[in-house]
Amino acid sequence: MIKLYYLLSVICYLLSSPIYAQHFESSNYNIDWGNFNMTSGRKSSTNYSLTDTVGQNAPGEYSKTGVKLKSGFQYIYPFDEFSFAIDNLDINFGTLTPSIATTAVSTLTTTSPSGLGFQITTQENSPLRLNSGTTIPDVLGDNNLASEFVADTWTNATTYGFGFNANTTYFSTTNHFRQFANISQSEVPQIFDSSNTHVKNHTTTITYKINISSSQAAGTYQNYIVYTATPQY
Amino acid sequence: MTNLSIQPSQLEIQLKPGTNYVQSYIIKNNGDVSVTLNTSVDTWLPQGLNGNIIYLNSPPNLNISLSNSDLKLGQNFILNPNQSKQLVLKIQGDTPGDYYFTFFVNQDVSSNPSTNSTQLIRLGSHLLISISDSELPTTNFKINNFKVQNPFIDCFFSSVKFSGEIQNNSNYFDKIDNTISISKNNTVINKLTIFPDNVLSHHSRTLRCLNDKSPAECQLSKPLWPGIYQASIDNTSTSFIVLPYSLLIFLLLLIIITKLLIDKKNNIL
Image (cartoon, rainbow over the protein chains, first blue to last red):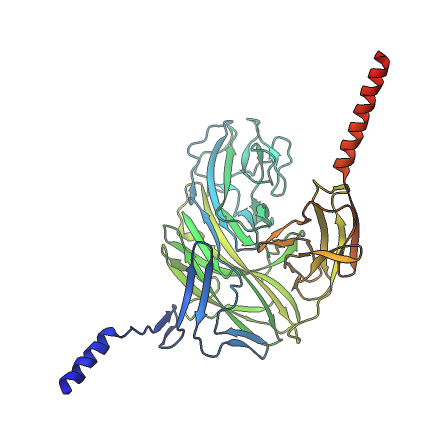
């Protein structure tokens, strides 16, 4: 009889399903709970996608002293992830030759939350400058119209400065260039790409252009360019 | 490549004066290099009618801080490739009204050697905050410039396109929750759901409609029976006439050609 008891115990142990506890952690907290959900996750087939939470204790919507808590079974995903990428960090124009423009290209990639568009603005900490303070000024364009707001054509070899073009509707042609908003002059960053609808892996090609005169002091000119991406509200 | 993501991408909350709200964000480095980051909160104003914004370069006028024990706003931290970090933002405000901020994750300038121009990215998640004694503060939407874009609507070949603006005259933001009702002979024949865009306090949004969970132009698809139609949103309405213009033009051309042929034949005889 005892042998049969031990045999049944071993069989029961071997056939039993594992019980999964749940573990959560962050840089500040660890939570180990034995009974959080029965099951949850993402399921999909050819035609359908389902996310679920089953077996949660005390689900519901609670509010107290001004704060609303949606607890337990999942509510709708309020908003998706927003991501933004740039392909490289450093732009190197190499050795510049006076009156011969040099260009460099960079690519931004944006994925906005579902149902929401996005906008990208840009700014510079200062014009390209030497440690001595000498700068390559932001370009004014062939017609002296370029600013951080307005793009002007830039094809003349005698138009000097630093500016950018983007393959967006904010630039009429690939020969139109704008200045970066100069934060050291309290200029306000301006939008150069946006969408009113959701985008996935939307790419924006930035073309930097620089042209110097023969009187430009030699040296390594540097600045920081910041691209700011936000969803539309 | 630097590739960052933030979740959630937007937070919309109502708070009672004097209460706290805590929200966790997941910041992930999806790129292939380690990045040094810090956080900040900036104030903004809406720009235009499509959800774009402009920053004011002014600090937020609410108490906003990070609740992480090892991190404060503005303090640098490093994210390695494929690493994510939870940031816990705490918001507290006393004065009723609307507040619009962006919680930013900024790539730090000190972490990158520069050759000429060093490119950095900032990624933002919006905070739309209403502070009110009421859980559901009263909002007052008004429809402006509601009209049909195309004046001549053909039964067979024209869709009816609607345009307009929704203005929020209240002190609190709210989502649009409304429909465009299309009626003919005082009978509603179709309803277009307006996309639930946020309309900020004392600002307007361009009218858009919901199409397969996404915003789209508000339009009534062809074909349509000839007649006089009325489109209305609440008490604002506009009328439009649908006629078989293409058929009429075809018949007119047919008559002209027939007449020309008959005239020509008479001249020959």
